[in-house]
Image (cartoon, rainbow, N blue to C red; front, top):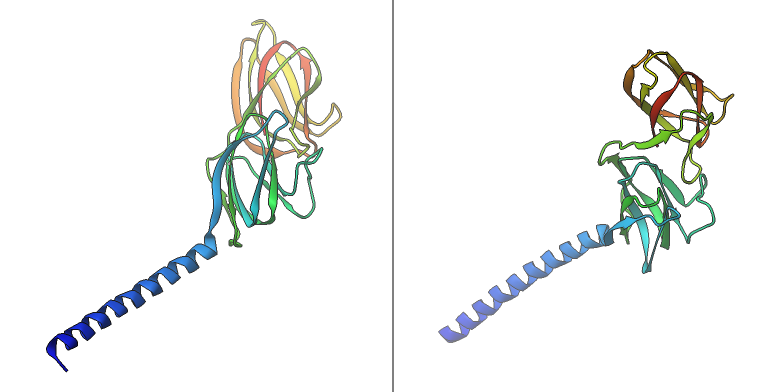
Length: 233
């Protein structure tokens, strides 16, 4: 066999070996993509009803949600309903400032939160291992209270139990003390906070989130006159 024939065979063998290596590399890459391929990452704004809908021709197997708002986000499989599901299969709840990735199969998904706030959603075509954690830390929703009215001053957007996180308050007359209660749901509900203010006193308290048993926060002015903002989820 001639020398140039040997060189041609050697070059062809080297080319084939490179092709095999490259093919193996591509197969490995494709296998990796098949394990965690995402349909897309989307930053979404809740509409005036506090709802976002997503659909695709390719069904998702798992969904990751980053809650960027001030109320828990309810993630569901399926189309929008007249009210958000609070329990059952095909749904999960993501706390304020948290992220959660869980199996939620389907080609259509609906998310419920506070109108105008943001949520990040990643949908995966293949099942992902469950994951959870803190993404942003808690952000509170501030409620300005008409301190002359005993009433429900806050209700969660979709019926989940409310969370209380403190207040900012000031006594307004400068000449008398003031006292008010924050209660769970109604005047006769569980006492969440009882606050006494001296004349001309201002106070700011940030509490660890306390989960109420109802979606509503009730304010009861016992005496005096105050300016008040509550922190809630």
